[in-house]
Length: 289
Length: 325
Image (cartoon, rainbow over all chains, first blue to last red; front, top):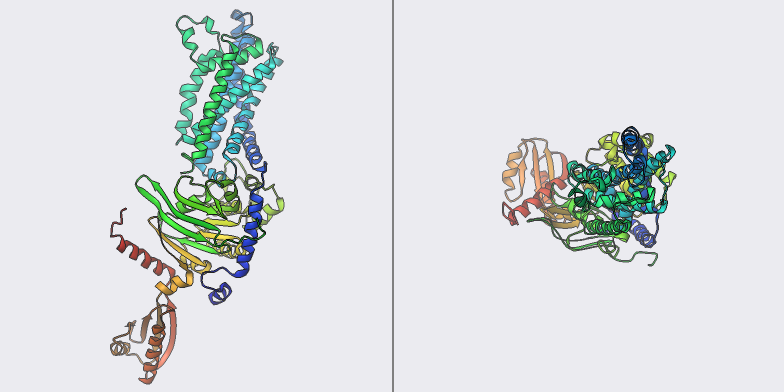
């Protein structure tokens, strides 16, 4: 058998001439194909990411909605009646934007962080790293999918609140702008953490010790006007306060801080974390080593 | 671009070094892969095979030196080079969220190929995964996961396929099937680079073999040349009457050994060593003329394993026992 194979090979070490010719044709054809731009690649990654959380929607969508609705029932309906209006808004209405943001921030972060980190742990990230997807396409697909999940959850909570009679449609475009910018910012944070993180603790640390505390203290349940000195001033250093109040302005028309401050902060945060994520992906730090 | 690729090499690796702190996982490697060839990269664990493949496929983006595929730089023009290359990585992986068919659809999609059910069916059948197409990839056996990884690497029908120890954990029957499939892919114009511990198969398959150890590419040769340079032949002669030791004494200048009273073994050089053939001629003539009865004559040659060991030993000797750099 070997003799036969050798005969076919011709000169020692050379492939059979017909195989070499076929290879030369194939290479030329694929080089031509590779130079064409297409969106199938990034679309596939985005679609896969959507399907990933959709196949486990009970965990990724329904569960956070149910948890948030419990807050709504307990704080809004049970206790809300005993609380005064805040800046002319009933407590139940005041609470809705806070709860929307609580769920939105957590889920935007978790989606991109866990999805990419699990790919790293299970080794499937290799399947992505060898593809011609550009770094921008890679980042955009992950971020968009996380934003879709966060907006879906935020949207459901907002919708349920409306059905339950809350008056939360003061300026919808402003509310949507804040929701999208916030979801993008935290999805980017999640992506960065997933790239640099080395075990699940690193992924869990940030929500437990930074994101959740900042969100709870960021005016989800109260107005900072209700806080004693110096805590009302200290609160002004919490970036989440600006995000929650931006959405609150869009939903019920009141805010503790100027709305444009929130827009500037969110744009800056998106630029910083977007640049950081891009730099990590381009240099291959932690994932292409 | 013309309709036919005309360069001598498909892949050019030039002076590639990859450092991890003090360690040079790949140390100044220069190598060319030619269109249509099957190239085997052999080396012990930790020799740098996977790291070198990583530099070509894009899994490693920071290294010294340069790599180009079809004339495109793998770092600068990655979008083009990665479209040309397929990789079956060594580490088994699985996507806990999706089934076999979905995973293949996605993998083709990343490369810009719209999902083709026919292509997926063809690969699933070829690799005996058709029945498992709806199974979550998490629940596949090791061998099945390996096969799925091969399917994934073929979804975009690459020009250059890297198989990094693809038969690890795969049963013998499938291994044989895989190797004949590799031959078939090559016939269709795929260039193939493989690393394997099953050296016999590299010997059976590869046109050229590169031996790598401690990050350095020690030798690249045509398989036949490698065998000739380093391979030794032997001839086992079974005598009718015994007295093998007597003949060993008589031919003191030959590398002749008595395996037992009836059997002699003559060792001689590689194929290019014409003197070796004369040794055989001289011994057989003398035996016949000296009245010995020859019951059987059987030839053999050293396996790639033995060659491989020799090259590694030479390398270790050259670099001292510690070999620290």
